[in-house]
Amino acid sequence: MGSRKLVRDLFSSKQLLLQLVQPQQVAESRLPLISSNWILSSRRFSDRNESSKNVQGEAQSDPKFKQSINELKGKAADLKFAKEELKMRTKQTTENLYKRVDGAWKEAEASLKKGRLLTGATISLLIAGGAYASTVDEATFCGWLFNATKLVNPFFAFLDAEVAHHLAITAASRGWVPREKRPDPSILGLEVWGRKFSNPIGLAAGFDKNAVAVEGLLGLGFGFVEVGSVTPIPQDGNPKPRIFRLREEGAIINRCGFNSEGIVSVAKRLGAQHGKRKLAESTSTSPAPDDEVKHQGKAGPGILGVNLGKNKTSEDAAADYVQGVHTLSQYADYLVINISSPNTPGLRKLQGRKQLKDLIKKVQAARDEMQWGEEGPPPLLVKIAPDLSKQDLEDIAAVALTLRLDGLIISNTTISRPDPVSTYPVAGESGGLSGKPLFIPSTNILNEMYILTRGRIPLVGCGGVSSGEDAYKKIRAGASLVQLYTAFAYGGPALIPQIKAELAECLERDGFKSVHEAIGADCR
Image (cartoon, rainbow, N blue to C red; front, side, top):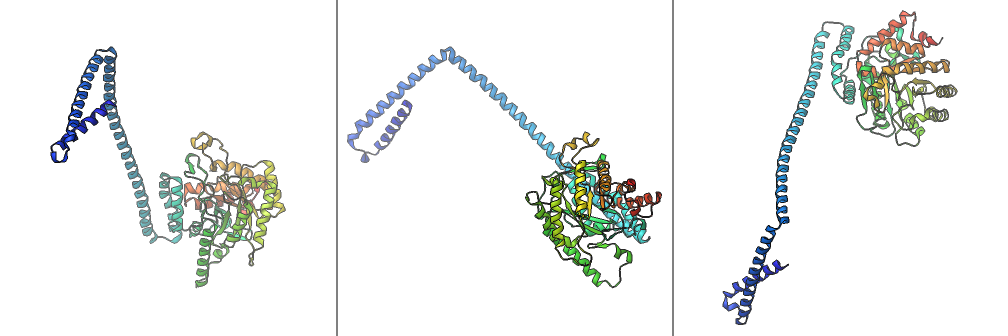
């Protein structure tokens, strides 16, 4: 405080002296005051300066002062060292950041290169295919196109699983996939629910969730294609990543959680496709071949199934399924109630005897109250899980027989992790397991359900099918129809004609004249 007062006094005296040079503005009576203030301030400044020197001298001779000085020097040295270390770390951080950026750039370049290779391979195939087509008949060229997809399909393995799936759907929706022109072997034809199937091999729900590629997928040669699951209200599903490959085991773990554009969007899309087909039929001058007419469904050649799901936040599951029936059943050759996905909380509880019975009654009533033509209402199926107890299976069979359910799909994905899947780190991811590891447990459940229902309800075998032999085993276990998904994701379009040819060979090998004769052969 004394120093501040001294400065104020000096400043005040200085101002007064500046005014003193202007005698006309300063009164004579103030001169003594100016003089005394200046003298007083000068003395105070001199005294304080002298005192400061004395204190400084005494402090320098004090051991504590010397110790403080040494400590300050030590801290200064530490500060200098810290400064150098910070400089070094900044340099290292900059170098590391540069390396990461450079690595990311190289990775991006590699991805771009892969994309160019994929595009180049596709264009090359198209050019080569065009040249080849001019020299061979349609059937031979069709076979060449399917085989050519084996060259392109491996490139999808370099992509994220969901990105690869999106590209596959886009390709099918835009007609960038081969179209099967060869008739199916007559031994594969069969009739289920009054619908004629050219072959029993179908694509399971989950691949084309929003019905964007129905025409392209049926054109690949599937006997039927099932779209969905479709929820009443659009929902994004679970956060990404949510699809995990186990390529070595031919398996996939997914927890998509019914990601859907909603029934309104799907209904508009199916309605447009339906109208387009009707218009083409009415304007066509040449009648379609008898075989093609026999195997036509509401989506054209092949049978179309629509798989219905419930919204994650819905409290009334029955209302969700009823809404799906009212909106989408007019476009479906058959309907599926999906109550077995492991990725929607509480959904599998609907497989209980009472819950299932109440649900089916409400959905059947909603379907039957609608107006139908000569063909009648679409068949109603229920898709069940493979993780069911003996009692659960008995309850489901009893409900299905009592309510005259049109069919069961066996099965959905499993929450179990059988060996050797359990040894992989990705096995710790939540979600449903599909693919080859699911084949044996799902086929066992299929066989047991065929026995429980006494073969009176058509069953669809789904889970782990990757060859014609697998499809044949499903049929012998009790399946009228067979679905695949994971194997198609890995094998691509070329797998479809391969499975059909192998299945026909299996039937002929064991003396069966049709698929019907082989259904449930292992249960007799």
